Image: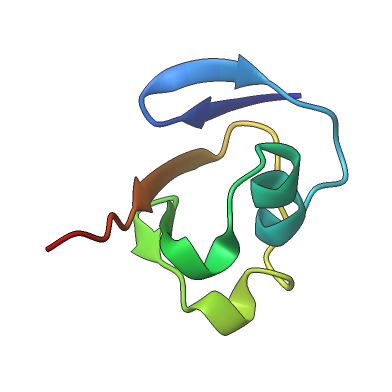
Length: 66
């Protein structure tokens, strides 16, 4: 299915939740803020929110440093 991920069209397999998509992308959910169709998701909802055809997802990575 097609989604828009960080401003680019992307083809992914169906059946993903936000959490499973992050895992497939090899991203650590605790280090990512997800905007799903213009709504910022709480991390405890990543497993409950299904990714559907045409969704727009923006991922923001936290970067540590000092």
